Image (cartoon, rainbow, N blue to C red; front, side):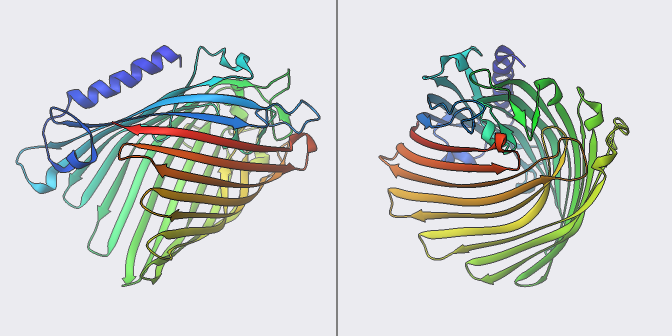
Length: 431
């Protein structure tokens, strides 16, 4: 999708949000800083400077380790209104919301990375959503979209400076409150990934696992359906069951098409007034071919696997100022090239509100990733990292953030190893 088409789409969605507002409510007023008729709008703007010591995710042997300095101005827009349909009542008030954070990245040390006109970015939480309340049902229609270029979001990539892709996810989720203690959730979504470019510096070959890759093999479309039930059996204990089916098609490589089925029990218990333990486990079965379209059923038999997944998450607030979360688990995830991977992880995050002006957020993680099955070009790697972000509220409308991120990737294939340090300084303003 071209930059022009993306801009037209964003403007069209914003115009739709303004144009189809049918009613006015005072509820959103306190959250927004601009009012346009029945629509409340929140505008934010910012600029950040980012320095990284290894923009190409290189180990220094196959290609040199290159630093980079980039500048990232951005604009955030959130527009919301409430719609009421006759006969008017509190139960038929529905929420229409549009959220987008738009920006572009300018590279200083390697201007050849600016050849894409501008490195336009759209944050992953950009979305047009419509929430409908109908009796015991809450229906959420959504269309989420993003444009990203950071290759570190997929840990399997190496020797890559830019991975530009557009992702669109459209779907519907329904929450059914059967009674005061039982809730049923079900939904469907269709997600499309369009790989626009994959760029490595100094003629390095972008690689995935231990295989060279091209953008034509990365385009994909995923259909997913899910169903979950949650029941309160005791005042402090909830139990439930969740299931899903996810089928992915690769137009440029139909042999990569696959389907994954997951199902298992869930539970959450409130240990104290400020601590909650959430647990889930189950089985994931993967098979070649797309169950929704019936394509790609041959040529990938090595993908057929059954594995267990689990997650144990403890969230706690120690006091008014400090809260933290610890997660340990194993999950099955789909790689860029259609391989089902098993990821075992430990993740810890914390937030410390030092005072009314200063807050500190930290994160530590360790992950071990390997592909399932016997597909040619198998890979295995481990990732370790940490983040540290300090926010200072300069005034009621202006704040500044200083952040640090470290990633260390250790793979069976030494050519995939890399370390990266990134420092970010940002200034944000809320109108």
